[in-house]
Image (cartoon, rainbow, N blue to C red):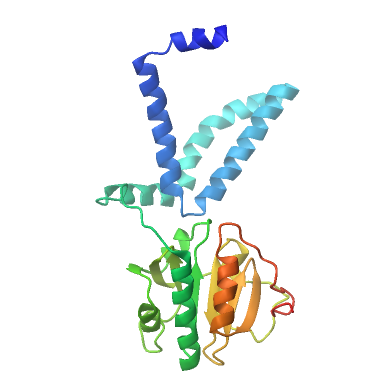
Length: 270
């Protein structure tokens, strides 16, 4: 207790300001990289650095310690190169008026109902569609491949985007909270060998984006009008509007459960 009081006695206003500035810098860093895959990359780097420091301090390996000490300057140079897209995006966001103060609220139930109704009507009209709901893993890298909309989510907007002759009907729509962030986005195709041969590009893209993220992808087949949902690389097919609504309510939650989807045959478990 005495040592704690002694440490606190050395604190001055400049010390508190110094700590707050460092904390603010780290907060800004994490704030601006949220919504991108750089979060996972940063976690990996921190984990490697932590393990290296622990190994060098506990095992006292001379050569390894030398390697770690001499690698730090190279790492400091490499970090801006690795995170160049995120740093550029952060500066762009910082320059937008009201960026730091704007926080949108969302109603998950309303978002799900809107998507289910839109998918049901798209299915009736045989309009192909690919709708991706962003989870905790950011999809900003995919957003950057499409046309940024940042529009309020509505059934009419989704129907207009996926109209057969519309300019943005090819590619995926990405939804973040209750906003349509972008349309005509390019997604990675799944290369899994266990997928059915009859799956088209939209279905493979839906599975592909969910293999590396916790996103949820809704697909409407242009040929058959069937509705499907992909999550964690698994696909549930031949859903109607009501079933889609129930599946999304089960999956689109803070704690996501992925059971109920069968990877091998792409059908719902009974």
